[in-house]
Length: 258
Image 1: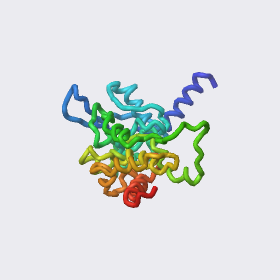
Image 2 (image 1 turned 45 degrees about the vertical axis):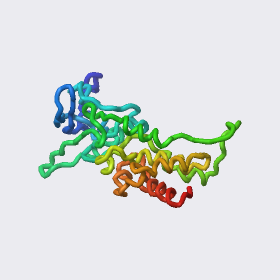
Image 3 (image 1 turned 135 degrees about the vertical axis):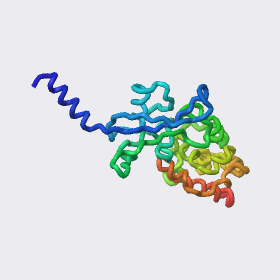
Image 4 (image 1 turned 60 degrees about the vertical axis):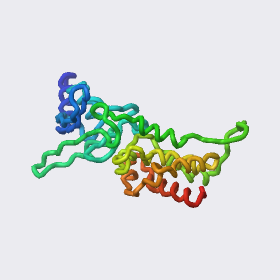
């Protein structure tokens, strides 16, 4: 078999795995219109590919003006959080095959993609993350100690480390905070992500600023605004028990034991 024939066979085999998918994307460009609109793009893609791959295909082959954030593409940087089929997800971790569903005629329904809620949309799928990161900075997300700097690492037992292990997984994607109805209604609320990162240091046995962080979260826009809807836990792409962490911070505020 000639090389050209083999190439055609391989191309045909690769194409046989592709399906036609419609991406319905909520577009917004303040330089064009004050209103957002929905736009459909139809592409052929392997169902084992990710939503991020589909967005790349649209941007690179169909419409270069499509705007979204992404970096590592491996679920670590958290920059490509968006609402996909009505749920907060990371585009780089969401497989096409897991979210397509046929209608009554057997045709796949469009995959809807839009910016996360509660934060100002700057363009297409990009939101202004400044309020989110300001809340994060406000809870002092760093180790605070007094005395002389040690000459070796600060020791900690495995049990002490396990106490806050879950909340060290946060990648600051804002999926939890932008899924919170309290945050939607009032952007002044610290939000789940900030509380999770406060939890990580409040319960760290090496840290000495737990009381200070608790007072910050005792504010009217702090931890007591949580209504325990579990949206944040459901939205977290890292599987953090966000609602549980918030409840532990509330308990620490009441008992002053942490």
